[in-house]
Length: 132
Image (tube, rainbow, N blue to C red; front, side, top):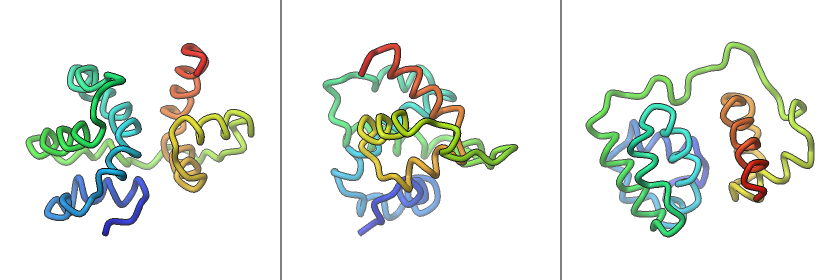
């Protein structure tokens, strides 16, 4: 069994590919949206193709996994930020809204804010625009 967090899933996708079969469908469903949105920065056409409310998210993650096999290791995926960011930069209301919308744990959102604040801010903007 693979740990149920975004870092563990990323490690399997990019480093321990032989363990992909151990990632559960529930984990794939849970993390699909985050991966698809993040991959959209580098692979917008592929992401747009998978950006459908009716998509089976588990299959969507499997498609990303297969696609990433042919791509170089994405050093940009977990690159360290130039400056440290904290969840104090995001209001408690926004934080709770993201937790609910992304269906992730508080620790995982803390990690994303710390290491990928720009993407988290984009998610907040998206939520405001779509009124979700």
